[in-house]
Length: 162
Image (cartoon, rainbow, N blue to C red):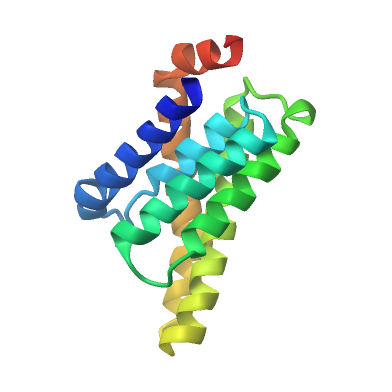
């Protein structure tokens, strides 16, 4: 039941991200709350659980957002599985750990999306894409992740107990 609820919450966040947070721009960047969510819950789930939830939420995001189908599913699957695999070697209760993990996962997400955008759509604003994707977006997502982690810490620790 826990897995189903986590998956449904991820799908709800895809809807919220597509309808609300994409219109909140800071430095012409919107937050990626789905990757923040998947990074945090992956610290408390098994590899297979985290990977499957990441793939389902990512494919839902691909269907909802559009673009190159399968990229978000693959990114969320790989990052969720990797973080879940390394969870025993990571100190989870530190805000700096959450900051660093979200920074890295957002960086991977940005690099893969930039590479596929350049290859598929022949985009020429590569300098702007690199500045936004490598500096601004990971930093903003990481700062937001610390705030969200502090707010939902009790619920996350309850996930750890279950």
